[in-house]
Length: 552
Image 1 (cartoon, helix red, strand yellow):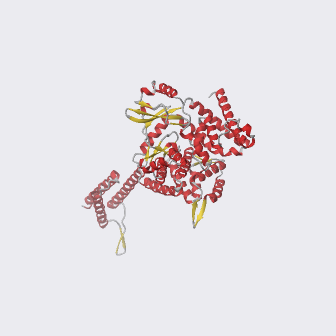
Image 2 (image 1 turned 45 degrees about the vertical axis):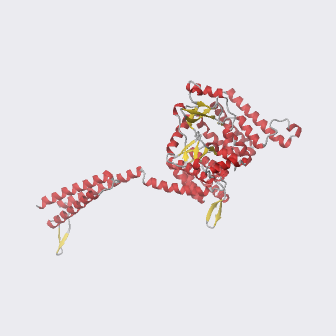
C-alpha cells in the first residue's frame, strides 16, 4: 500500500474513532440538545462498537469477530452485538462477483454453474458465500472481497501503531485491547489465499475419515483459486443461528432443533473430541472456532466451515500440550510450568522463576481445595488468558502454532459456555487428555519406528549371541579353550572327555536351534529372527560335523 493510501486509511480510522468516541463522551458530558445533533447518538455502547468496527472494515471486523466469542472479556451485551460481524457484514455487489470470476476463469458464474444465487447467504470480513448448483450437486462458493489484500496490509500496520500508542500514552481504558490485538496481528495474513485453506481442508477431511462426529466439506478443485473457493454444501444450522434463537427466545426454532435430536451437551462433547482429536492425534486443527464456522448436523455431528486459520503442531508440541492441559485440570502447577516451558521460546530475557512465582499467585484465584484435591473455580478461558499475560510479562513466549491452539481452546470454551452452560469443560478435558495420553503411549509402543527398532535390535542381539556361541563352541571343540578338570586331586586339561562334552554341547545347541526354526510362527519378528536362527543352526551343524571328524 502506497503512502497516500496509507494516509487515507489513517484519516478514515481517525475520523471513525473520533466520531464514535465523541458520541461516547457526549452521552455523559455534553448537553442534551448537542448530543442529539451528534452522529450515532441513538446507538447503545455495544451497537456503537459494532458499527465502528464495521465502518473501519477489513481486519477490524475480524478483530470484532474474535471479541464476540469472549463473554469473559467483554460483556454479554457486547458479544451479542458483535455476533453480526461473523456473517452479516454488508455484502459487496454481484457485479464485483462477476468481475472476480471473469478475472479468474474468463467467464461469469452463470456460465459455469447450473444455478447461481446472486444474493449471498453469509458475508464476513474477507469474503462472502453464495449458494450454487454444479452438475446437479449443491456447492458453496466463497469469493474474496475486492482490494482485501491492500486493506488488510494497511490495517495490520495501523493495529501495530494502535498498540504502540496505547502503551506509550498510558490509555488504561484501552489497555485490554493490547493482548488480543497483538495475537491477532500475528496470524491474520494467512487467510488471504484460498488455495492454502483448500489444502488444509483436504488434509483435515482425510484425517476425519471414519470419525462419526466430525465432517469437513469436499473441495471442488477445478474452480478453486487464490480468490475463489468452491466446496461441498452442508445442509444444517450454524451454531450462531442457534445462539441467536436462544437470545431471541425463538421457541419454535429451538423445538424443531430439539425434535431433530440436537443435544447441547452431546454437541459440546463432540466439539471437544473432534478439536482435541485433530490437534493431538494428527497435529492439525481448525483454529478459527467461531459459531458461524460450526454447523449442527444430524446426530449432533460437528460440521466445520472456513479453514482460513489452521494450526499445525509437531509430535513434540502435542505431547507437552496434552501434559499441560491435564496438569491444568488437576491443579498440578509444576507440571503446567514444565510443559509450558517445553513449548515456549526461552531467551536471555526470559524470567523462568518469575513465571513460576506468578503462576502460584494466579493459582490461588483459579482453584479451590475440596478435601485433598484442587478443583477449578475459574473457567478455561480466563486461565489461558492469565497464562498468556504472564508469559508476556516474563518473556516466556509460546510458539506461534501453540498460540493458535490456546486461542482455539479459549474460543471453544467461550462458545460452549454460551450454548451449554451446564457442561463441565474442565472435567471433560481431563477425561479426553487422559484418553489421548494412553493412546499416545500405545501409539509410541506400537509405532512403525518402534517395531523397526525392536526388529533391528532383536536381530543384532540374536546375531551377536549366535556368533558368540559359535565362537565358544569352536574354541572348545578344537581345544583352544582349556577346560580344567581334576582327577584324584591332580589337575588335568582338555582331552577326550572334554571333547566329548564339546560334542554333547554342540548337539544340544543344534537341537535347540532346529526346534526353534521348526516351531517359530511369529509374523512380528519377521525375517531378522529367521536369519539369526538359520545362522545359529548352520554354525552348530558345522561345528558338530567338525567335532565328529576330529573324534573319529
